Length: 233
Ligand SMILES: Nc1ncnc2c1ncn2[C@@H]1O[C@H](COP(=O)(O)OP(=O)(O)OP(=O)(O)O)[C@@H](O)[C@H]1O
Image (cartoon, rainbow, N blue to C red; front, side, top):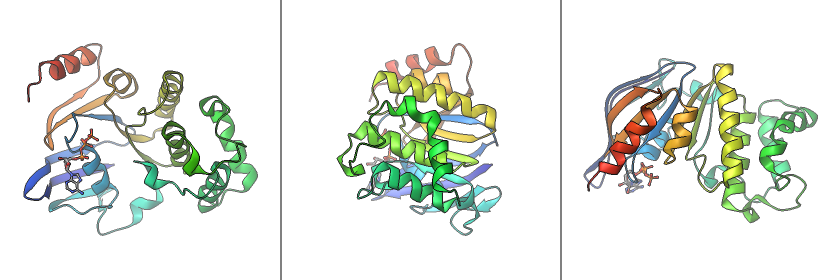
């Protein structure tokens, strides 16, 4: 699904992403972990052609995302609240996103039914604009809007951040159900517990470089905890 080749990004002369070669296979659920400033969001922004690399390339289904827009037809993402439209209500926003997929309003509303529990009675019919929701609820709106696009490739930056524990568990359970749909998912997270629970493969980033790339097993969480607890700066 994705191939990254000799990808480099620098800010003010400091290398923040430096990946020799990385392949993400179709259908994989991949967790990206790393301390603050490791380069996770920068990588995601390059995957979405929001910023350009200094050198190297990102191929999505074999095509360079910076040169060919095909990836936009099958990729959905939520990186931060900047992806939302603040002056809309959640209903208006979901209908807008749905209309881009040619969904009728009733199709959109039907699609949202499985998210009733995740929304916890706080999102729909509240009469509020997106800008007036808490960060956690804005996250929920953004994640569900990304899923509404029925993507083949889903990119979520810290999806568990700002969510209450109940919602984190509901989101985690939902993300696990997506595995059966052959969706390729990239999730960055600081929550080692959740990310190892949801993802079958974990890539550990440090200063823009891949330090570990491993398939999840019963020891992965302990390994990651040991790695981060021994880390000295
Ligand atoms: N627009 C920018 N201008 C200058 N430096 C930037 C810019 N964007 C990111 N950086 C720097 O690039 C490095 C990687 O940042 P990035 O946000 O990708 O890390 P991250 O792994 O997502 O961190 P976090 O876990 O804190 O979200 C950091 O040192 C950051 O300060």
